[in-house]
Image (cartoon, rainbow over all chains, first blue to last red; front, side):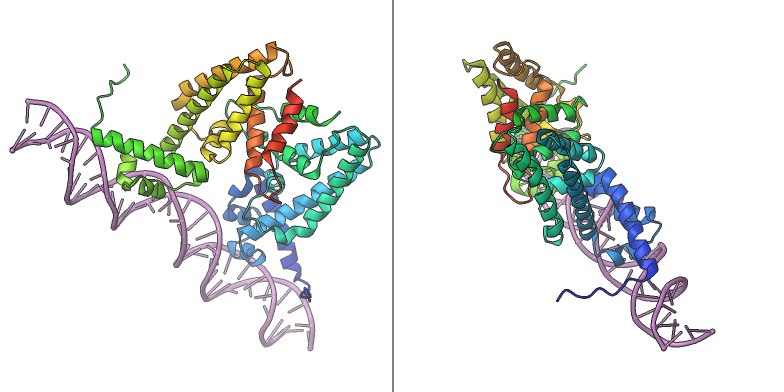
Length: 188
Length: 188
DNA sequence: GCGGAAGCGGAATTACGCTTCCTGTTGGTG
DNA sequence: CACCAACAGGAAGCGTAATTCCGCTTCCGC
């Protein structure tokens, strides 16, 4: 019963790409503060076009978040190819954080927000979770991380470190240091 | 040259108290999203009165944050009276988080934000830092926490756990668990 | 090549909060 | 107790950013 999508007109598809690209840059830099008008301008399109493709800001945001989840799943799958299970785990965590450093949309994906319509990206989230869980389980089985480590722990810890990236006063806040403290509580 | 404050009229002082109380509740519940109109209403006052006491929202917010810093300094001083240095440290951290759980203004204080005029509460921040540092130094000296632990680490870690409190997707996020992971990386 | 559906642009509209302004009130001092 | 600066109230003003609307343009099947 899923409505059969008829093919988009060529220019429409091209414009949709442009919007995603522009939104990707602006949401990365400014998070959800990024403005629709700026996104349209950067895509070289008018507001009307933007709203034809995405009914509202929310929808655009959730599309971006979905894309980020896909990226995160890729990172996890790449980690699976690392021989040492403990290293794989650490590489995955480091990889996420390195990516999140300078991409506020990524932060949104991992830290989330009530008002995002998560239903729309259930699949991407599930793929992400599955890939990450495989890496964690292997590390646990090898005894290289604490035995009670779960996917939820991973997500929570990652979002904790991400919060450090966006933490301002004093300026003396180094997320790599935070990561180290956290890793020392996780790896054996 | 500090302008000598002449005493406020009695009704003015009373109203200022009311505003602080109302703002305390609303900022606690809603963070900086809390609206000036709601604050005035809850204080049982008009907008004009609110703005007579605080020239803008920023000023009210910074006043609240200053108050929170005072509260945090008190917590640290209370911890100093605990005999065991390691327990004192843990109690302080737990105390902060327990308080921050359900008080978004507290979060603002610890996690901060660029656009807050920190100058205005330099003193409160300094008192807070001094008290926390004493507790940390004692714990370090006793060898009960990692030797390289600093005030910055403390703040960063606390704000990381606080981020978990406001972390949404899945709903399966327990900040006490996060705290445990972090403590395991800190205590010896 | 034509017709018209799909797509585009961007000015106007809407919504929502902060802030200001002006009128009426009151505490407290001479 | 009379006066008046300080104070209170809340409606109107503003700025900002999302969203809508509608006349114009472009693709694409015939």
